[in-house]
Length: 218
Image (cartoon, rainbow, N blue to C red):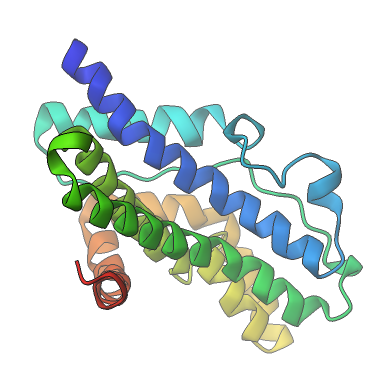
């Protein structure tokens, strides 16, 4: 039981940070473009409690983690936070500005993956002092953030990649594409269960991993 609790802490801290800061990034960039909706609701904060969705941030990642530990299944763990409310009508250029607001989430995960890798470099310099547990947290932080980045870049609504694609489509195509949003999470679950989701995400994760290796030398 103690080892399970330790693992939950080691894996839970990077997971919660990755999910909640992803949403905070959306709100921060929206404020930069003139929409203060998220700020007024207290969503531009590093406090994870403000972003936690009981199901998406806690139950789903925890359930997938425990399933992985007890069944030896593939390491596919993901989750989500409460979406940050954004009002595009407050932007000077709604389509272009919303594109950057949407991209801020995956970019924040790439930045966090890089940050965990930098911490990993420091841990490797002082392995006896900082311990192997922290290194476990570091590597999971890198992997989980790259996973969230790749997942959210897939062109499936309501994921960020889907919204970015929507912003580039001609109006009629965009309206037809928007109708698929109601089935988005079902599509993701089916792709995950069939193993296709991992195949689609792998190239994006590899690109992020390669960039981090170049920048940090890991």
